[in-house]
Image (cartoon, rainbow, N blue to C red):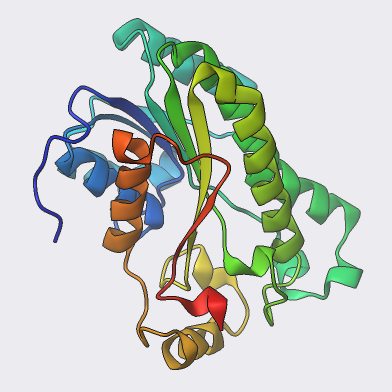
Length: 257
């Protein structure tokens, strides 16, 4: 359980990609809120709304808006509402990944062109689009966070095409950090270990990844969404004011073994 503090008091943040209260985005939202931040939370569509709205209510989100990141008009509308309501944005969390099931469960060499393009668009280029819209609102600097996984660096059994996709996401993080750094906008990636989330459940043989993490990670346990949230909140605070272009591991040390 996170303790109440005011490290982010007065900060305004947008969270994109919460699936339900068990998702990484939800853990981050809770950490941001207990640190005093005001939040705007989005949901993908009407079907998703019933799962995301309880999270928005729990953290007292000031704005709760629809956002399918493939919809240009919805993206424009979200940032227009943020500008109208707050006049600024201090941080953005991008917690989105998608790949069609057939491509996700198949070999990389068999991945379809359409499936690869869709996975890259939703998982990677959406970060670029959101960063583009966030930049002019981060007038006094800010922080942009995204969510990766160790499979971006090493071949992980059954992670398949999402490995190259996450590698592209981490490279994008580094390039954005350089391009936006002169405006004091920091860009970092969070890299949790395997977590029991809805998104992770789509990975074939996911239980094997869970067992491997427990057995081989130095701490011999799984990371929690609260722990990921704590790292996310820290990266938004001034304690991390010199941290940019970084991939922060929150995986019990699993990435070193």
